[in-house]
Amino acid sequence: MHKSVIRLGLVGVGKIARDQHIPAIRNDPRFALVATASLHGSIDAVPAFDDIDAMLTADRAIDAVCLCTPPGVRAQLARRALAAGLHVMLEKPPAASLSQVDALMVAARRAGRSLMATWHSRETAAADAARAWLTGRRIVSAQVIWREDVRQWHPGQDWLLAAGGFGVFDPAINAFSLLTRILPGALEVVAADLAVPVNRGAPTEARVAMLHDGHAAVTCDLSIVHAGPPQWDIVVETDAGRLVLGTGGHRLTIDDHPQTTDADGEYARIYARFAALIDARASDVDARPLMLVADAMLLGQTRALPAFEF
Ligand code: NAP
Image (cartoon, rainbow, N blue to C red):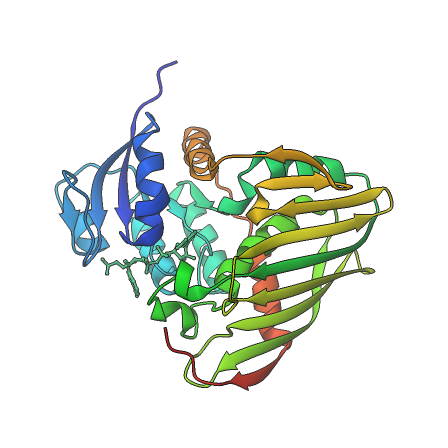
């Protein structure tokens, strides 16, 4: 059966919108980009509005929005879009807090619209294969090393280092999205150490200790002030071998034997799934990665670092 094209509005034309969303939308015949809402950003030949209210009240048919702003404003934008009868895709993290995510799920249910929380790092063949390999094995321990340089990956993004901007957890929530996807059991945070520059509101370095199914230690070494090449690796020791999910979920190695390496197709999969959710009138909101961040913040011991400037 022929499926209708989904007319999409893009909110927040910044780095991730330009790097990933716009190419993925253009390559997916199910979507037509019909409007943008951004104060400073726009896309050639696409009608541009300053903000979501102007976009929603314009005489323009839109079926769905994708919210690519920083997380602090995401929930209020999503609420407006749902109230206007649109389906909503949320960039990660889905909102600035768990209670906001909960309120959005209620709003989507009441509106009868699809709500999708994206976790782009999960959308790889290597992550699928890691999950399949770990299913049924006993987890002995796991280690997350997620270290990068914010000056390279988020140049000048002051919002990221403000309260509600997630700091080191902006990239590290990607690791948590993988952990919660590939490990078979439940994860709980037991302790955290958070290092916050004196002139900023969010940590730039963190160590987080978790337990898997109440006994296997999971340690996380996280930094956004890391010099040198980024490290985005998860190592899992099991009763039947050692799994390494490297390069941000793109490369799988088992017992030192390379298995799966995939190219950059994460956002194509995200849009295909969004279309499927809209067709099925379903939602997909997994808040577990955000829960782990929230618990690290709740339990974390904070210490001060010297001032950080970009
Ligand atoms: P960004 O480059 O700062 O872009 C966000 C855009 O949102 C801005 O250009 C801005 O456009 C708009 N905006 C609306 N309200 C804003 C506010 N209160 N403060 C700042 N900007 C605001 O950020 P980004 O790197 O694209 O990240 C956006 C989201 O995508 C984040 O949640 C991030 O975690 C996620 N993400 C980023 C990456 C990456 O590699 N950068 C990868 C995956 C996911 P106007 O000024 O034109 O309104």
